[in-house]
Image 1 (cartoon, rainbow, N blue to C red):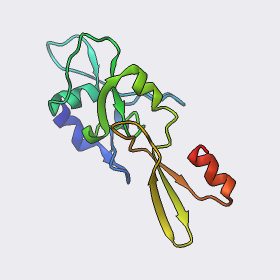
Image 2 (image 1 turned 45 degrees about the vertical axis):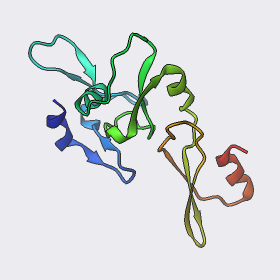
Image 3 (image 1 turned 135 degrees about the vertical axis):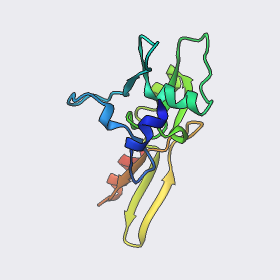
Image 4 (image 1 turned 90 degrees about the horizontal axis):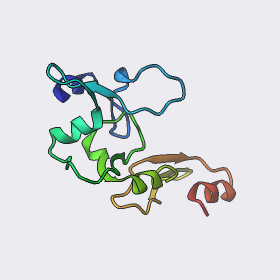
Length: 141
């Protein structure tokens, strides 16, 4: 299944493998694509789960609150380096995380890890501050 999907994926500048061609056109929805598992299966499954199973990094659990988190914060990404299985609580705590701040300075681009999660978020927040107040806002200070 995943081998049929990967050739259709686009890779963005952050390394996300995007499966937007599987996302139904719904404006404003942050939706993880689902795929039909083929003949003999009567349900759809999240493509992130299929990707994690394919690389043997998905562990079925009795815990109902385990989810697959997108470290890159991109719901259409299936790059397994950007996915981790963790509790719903940790997954939800990532929603407002800045991740890595990329700041455009006169001397060039500087990056700094602001995320405190483990493993850290891979989301990159681009920033071109015009004042110190702008930079403080991005860094959450």
